[in-house]
Length: 221
Image 1 (tube, rainbow, N blue to C red):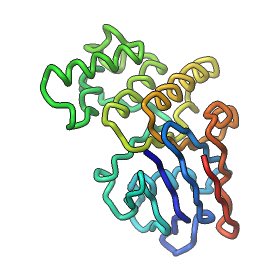
Image 2: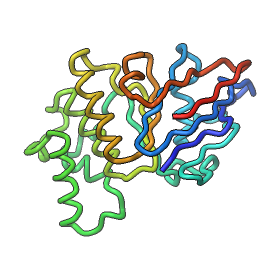
Image 3: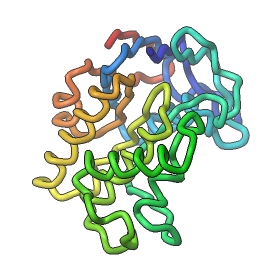
């Protein structure tokens, strides 16, 4: 699998481009990082890739997943997972049911789906916590559960929107390693938006600077 951006930019409702057209390729199991000043449009870039742009904003250029142009497809047809700054779990569902919610439709049968959830709980270090209320989990446990829910959907790519920024420094390092290792094992391309150069260095997949609309930027990860 691969994630490719071909001269991708986003225009505001007034027609102005938010950042310079971006061209890059993120290969299977690679985690590329995007950095840039606040307000440059890093989160908007991820929204454009995932198909979640706010009304009035427009995409220019192309988004390709394993060679398939998904630029104009709705979000649910793209197969792109995303992790946000806050690990959001459904409060009315148990931890196990949260993970089950993310399961790909390709996993069929009650026994197979239950086994997939149990395996994911084990990989996340959450053995025995499947029936717990998500509110009882620590910040690190919620982050691991949220990632496993995303991976269970079998996405073609994963977008990481500063998912470590709200964590304490010591916990941040552990969760960052868990997230990156899990993505590499799953062999899924990922794009990380961050303000922390340590996140970008740990990703090991190359750093792309988001440039003002008057400039250009290109990279390969």
